[in-house]
Length: 227
Image (cartoon, rainbow, N blue to C red; front, side, top):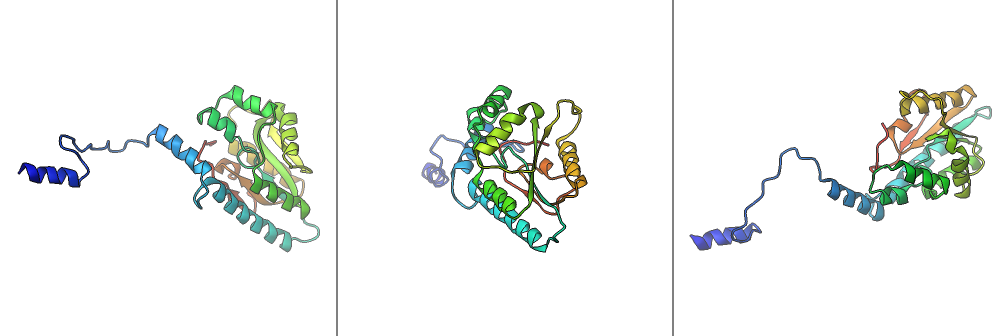
């Protein structure tokens, strides 16, 4: 009987004296394990990894842009709306340094030093739009006080000749949501006679609310959430 029990234990991958561990039902994923998984996701090059997914979504956005340009009438004023953080510029170095937590001083330091590199797939989309005569508008949740540093970082990374850069004003209502702010800025663009043919962002809150773009493309970002 003892031999039979030992064989069963070895068959199941357990040594004698070791017991199977029953998992906790409904327990959330371990935070440490999830952080390690996010780091691997960002670094790997398989189709389901971060950079390939970014490239595929940018290709989708490019197809939408080409379709809109091809169908436009001479009188049409076409616009592309881009978010900045994790859409146009990458803050990965700071995110990794801060262990996926948001440390205000570190974020401000990075912005002041213009340390965020361009996201290549979005930069290509930007130049495709400007070459086709599509006006590009940036809408970001960064505060107005960071306008000069944000503009300098964008230009240093190759984003030039955009139409406008919208940041949160200092006197914005504290209860204003990201959706309310960004949709309100899109309304200003539409009021100038533009058709927003494409809106690209890494958060759903970049894309939701009225007025909507004719096409909206969500980029991957499992690293943080802005509701």
